[in-house]
Figure (cartoon, rainbow, N blue to C red):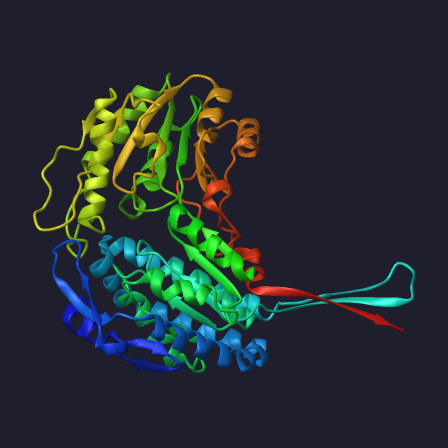
Length: 485
């Protein structure tokens, strides 16, 4: 069992700049609380704009040497980091459960998923290559080479404190880029622990810099507008993403955005219903529903709606709500009281629009930000809960009868991150996959994220890809060399 007090005490609480742990300007700090209890876990440095500038200075100064570091050396550092995270899986999982709320067993799953980005990109680091070809007229040779884009700014969210960091840090280190990372102020401890681990395995000073702050806009905007920064990567809401893209336009900064979602989950009449129920549980309840890939709109064919609804609701009712560190808990708290109020607003609005609440009135533990797993049926297609991200343990179910109609309804959103559907018809699987306007499509699967696959959305869900073979290209520029012979 993890010694929580010892674990929290082992995490650095300062800013990590230029290979040194330091206090924020003026000694300012921010509190990190446990959303299950309200307990203050730790106080960490609260960076100022001057601290942010110092972090970017450190990254810029380290860039040339890090870019010149042999790919094999960069690869070995990532591999060591992967192995060390794996050894300390319980510690990283406990940190995430304590500061974010997800159940410990699920947090262990995030450690496995998150660490895999370091292993994957350790292997990709030594495979960065270019091309060679004779010019069509034979008079010259055409060469291309890949080079690191340069110092990167990384803004990571609170819902996956480890994986959203490793998914950005892994390819950047592999490509030869330095970085400034700003984790969410709600969940900074995991990233601070990761920075300490990277320092331990030997990542050179200034390559990785971490600044924690409650003044995200004040600290990050000057860095985004600073010509020393060459890339911005952000995971978070579409609203914030739009503002960051606007700021980045001033110096035409290289940008990748992983933004909000409104994922449809479609159950066709020929689906394996038991598999569909399990898939819906995974797609809806992963991370307490606090995921941009979470199933937000569940469409079930009218012929199987009653059976699906009964089986799905029974599983939702059986889930245990509580502190994620307690054995047997499968639904932890939401991140803040504000998040609880928003989810409850969406439930009340849906019921007011005619939806039936099948379950969700069970008592929840006091003292934390808890919402009982809730199932709504007969949801109006015009209800707020259909248009907005729920980001909580609430399933909104609608019915359909026609394939073309449900595809049209599934695509009727500004978002385009993830979509899921269940069918046993191979032709339908191909047909629907092609028609859904999403960057990620799960066929007969409720969770499809994988370090070896490109993750990202279309439309208002952003652009750029993380993971897979595409992921490292986000951190590389292509240089063409024409050589006369």
